[in-house]
Image 1 (cartoon, rainbow, N blue to C red):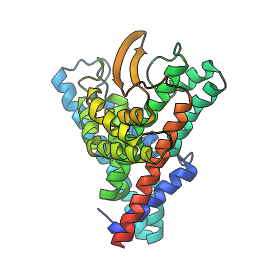
Image 2 (cartoon, rainbow, N blue to C red):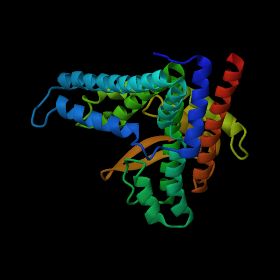
Image 3 (cartoon, one colour):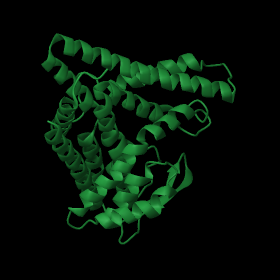
Image 4 (cartoon, rainbow, N blue to C red):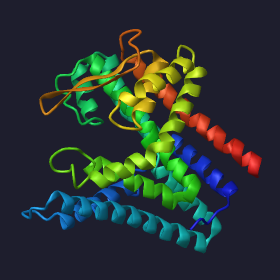
Length: 326
């Protein structure tokens, strides 16, 4: 399954980070996650056909089939493509692996999404800020104020440091591009069916639990890296980031998301969480961090700095291990 040595794998991961920094999400060919999403939709239609009522245990069993089939398909397809490329020529295999690993991470994409919210906020254009915020969160944004738009952008970047950067690279280190894409399939399952609403509470149960398990270790790595990043950033506090993780992370309903969000809140010195609205209904989200001052749009830039420093630390760590094992 693993085509390359540890030394080669480390260099492939470093190259994939560089590709993401420089190019970002691929516009062509179509992003693999789009195909994964289409596969999930078609499988859902097969497993829970319209007009047929299924009991909770049936939905759970079919949800397990959906999760395992999707992740197995993603792994198998990428395994086959990287094997074929490697068979044709070693350097083609390298290139294909780098490209697929890079497609599972999104540092540049996260920065671009956050900047879409920041720019209109900085220009005083709240209407556009609300519109762009709606692209990155599922909560209602039509009535949010400047602070809540900025908060949504910061929370999105912080949470996705795990999903869109650290986790895929941890799995790439273990099993190259195929395992990184297996992780991305699991994460996509969670984003599509892993909800606790009436439609998905049973059918998406397996997908949600699998995503929690896949992110468990990477989320804790993210806390350390965010604290280290804050430690070397003027105006931010690495110690406060660690204290925030210890005090607040467990309050988050997710066993993983509370760690990077608490770390970011503590590092910057703001409070994340609070009241969000979904379909017109208020929902109190766990409050993370200490409100040492009012959250402002410029905090989005501080969060982006933390994002890039975290990715730089991981990049440096990968190269350091490569030098050690080479």
